[in-house]
Picture 1 (tube, rainbow, N blue to C red):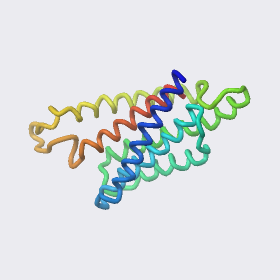
Picture 2: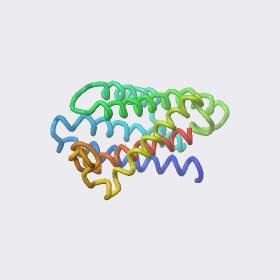
Picture 3: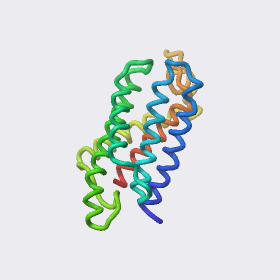
Length: 189
């Protein structure tokens, strides 16, 4: 095992772990905090299933991945306690998952006909893949410094502390892990 398969299995582990962690935290959160964790749980588990298929493991049916990705986009549109920027991020990542599920669903039949496995070659539209990579890279560069301990000092004139207004570092780290998993999946796709 090497190259894309190894990366895909690493994405399975990280995204599956994030999805399960977020799912486990759902019942302990107040109702206002559940939307973000529910979206992150769905995204993490769907990304793990998609990456398993990319690694040549058991692939989830494309219809399931499309449905979960579409539900993530729709769930992000509901104003149930998340800030607009947070909802927009989930909508973009959900749309990216939907794009990858559709691209891989169409590519898997073509690769199977040629004796390959899903993820054996390029799939999708290069411009859309590039736009998704740029968004994810910029999000990661913007978010990662918020996890550095020095960033926990109060910002001048703002008075709030930490990764964001009321966010804990684990939630920020979960979103960052899912974003980096998305980068890896687009590169392997």
